[in-house]
Length: 622
Image (tube, rainbow, N blue to C red):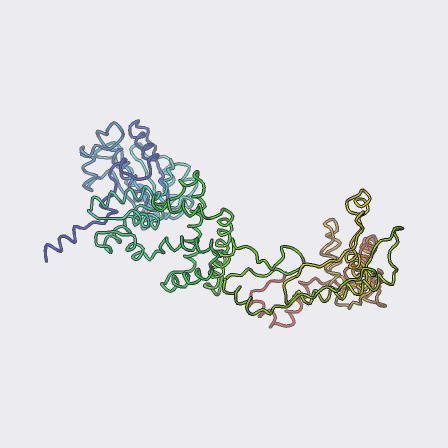
């Protein structure tokens, strides 16, 4: 029992056990460590350094290594500490008085900083410098920053400050300007995998590279997070870290699901996508995380399409091959459109009241991208577009259920009654043409009625022509003759337009079209339009309207455009008979012109319940 407790006390987490002790052992920060080693070799040291970057990338570790190397009595040729002198031994054993650390998160008051400044007056006992490492320096209060500023600007010759922070933007510019700033990079997935392999080999733990890749991606660029997850996975897997156990332990979606969803979308198989989504949601996975993960997967597939961008994939070599294989099957427009759809879903997900439905619609839209249009829907024309058929079974059900309605057979045309051209170029009489127009109109109505229940049939045209007239002449090009059905449609449209020009209108329609006209006026008349919008013409003797203006200057401006205003109202109201007159308001007739806001303010002032309703619904007057 005693031996077991001793073994438990000796356990140290990997993040502490394998913490780098030299510059060369720091992972993923080669440029920064090279700069710091060169500073140690040359002896050109600044009085203040600022190490900034995301969590777990080695800021505090590099600060300690740098502080030890600065005070080393016999540094190596490449700028590393010797670990043999008294200063290095004191640091390694935790008894050095020349290197002091302060956690600004818990010591952020002015008194703490003043106490620290008092210690700067004491010179080092061993070594050349007294190094102060202040971690999470952005947590200092403004007063503490101000108290620290003077000492930072003119510190004693034997003092060096090393500040570390994850949020550089919170530090005062006056502090930043007095420091050498080093920006630490996030850990890449390959570097993290390489370091985890080293740790696993030293600990005697078996692993799958794909499992380590999942841990590295989950760490999101932080080596400390990666080592913590590694310890968790090693404990769960009992010394054999496999891919399946890691995704089970971390509750991470298997990458195979994303590959399968993309393959199903390329096959337009929305039904199987819905089944797969239901299985994932039943296992407790969040729909928003699923969409985000699928978007990241599609982005990786897009990067894998071009050999130049394959290097941007932060994943294992085995997984990179799978991305390249799927990229060969997925068209580039499909990937672009899928990313747009999922990005829109990500924006709308938090506000959606039915999140599952939103995710389902997103996957259905994704399945529609490469699906061709239905053959029974024309590519252009007046027919309304229909939704694409998402499930193949629906097409079969519709085919079986829809009755087959035959298109009406064309009536036989008498050759003697057909429209033709005589040798002298004369045509048939007007009476015969009128009868043909009537018959054509009835035929068109019948055909349109049949179209609603049956597929459109190809038009059957009976023509009689002179064999000598075959070919194209310059006269036919310069003076083309329109088909009879087009001429008849134009006649019908002209009659309908003439009928619309005499249509009646109400005062409410006049007000509505008056506001619409003001909103459409050109920019140079924007001031005039705003004033006209607050006025309303009144019908005097139908269809005549009168506009009363409160001052002569504005009346002159309106009269200059009165013809255009009348023509616009005639067009909007479909009535050419409307006339618009203007006059100056008489004494006592003019009154204050209320805007919509004024009217609403007066309304809610007289009726408090309207104001309560506006506040409850968080409404604004547009």
